[in-house]
Every structure is written in structure tokens, then in C-alpha cells.
Image (tube, rainbow, N blue to C red; front, side):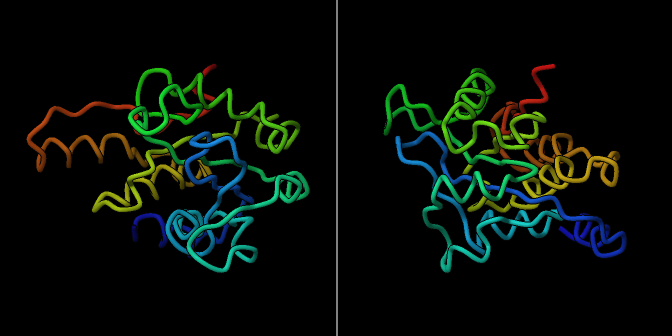
Length: 185
């Protein structure tokens, strides 16, 4: 984590505004977000400004779609996972193949249509379970790369995650724990 937070503290970059959506597409409701904890804290540590930080008093809660439109965030990060057993055929963004297509589908909802982040392909999805994992710092590294690509050009969250996975876990590593609309190009 210090690898990111020390650079942010030293360089003091402009903090892009970020809408972090909790389990986007898991239900038809839009839009659950995080306050100052959990992924909301990850956004801050990665050098962003969470648009829900002053609006959601607890860990997570609902944001009105009009609030997202009015905030016109620079970037959107959606948490996702493989929730097929809970929401068969849902619009949620899973891990791995098909994630980009589902992420793109989520941008067509009224709350996201026309906002800066969508227009500039600055919409991302990341594995929801990073919040409850010793690998939280990998999520923070990847978010820092999205928010400040110039400051973190040499940071490779995928390589870090793969190295630790292979060292400490008994199953083969499979990539695909995050995706961005910009990956489509």
C-alpha cells in the first residue's frame, strides 16, 4: 500500500473524481456505492476522490442516479464477481471472459449515460472480494494505475498478484480480476 500512498503524498496530484459502484448489475437497482470505508477507502488511497464520501455515512449505501449525473465523475469503478449461483444471467460483471461485454452493458444505464467517465472510456471493473482479502493492496495498485497512469507507469499489479498467488496458493493463477473499457481498443 505504501508503494502507492507514498507516491500520492509526494507528488500530490489532482485527484480525479470516482464513482465506485458496489456490485453493479447484481440487481436492477442503481446505484449502490461505498462511503469512506471498504472500496471507498481504496479510491482515496489510490489518489482519487470518492464522490460518495460525503453522501454515504456508513460503509455502503445507495446513491441517487441524478447525483451521479450531477457529479459527472472522471472515472467509474464497478466491483464484480461470479455471482451466477445467486443471480443467474445477471448483468453483473464477473471475473474473466465476458467481463468487458458486461461492463459495457452497465454503462448504458441512465445514471451513467453521457457522463465524462463513459465518454472517455474511463470505466473499470474489479473483483469485489478484494475488499476482504490480504490482497487488498493489489486492488489499490490497479486503481492507482487507472487514476494516475503517468505516476504509476512502472507498477504492474497483475505481475504482483500473479507472483504472490503462485507463491502462496495451491491452484493455478488465472488472470481477469479487473477490466477496463479502454481494454477494448
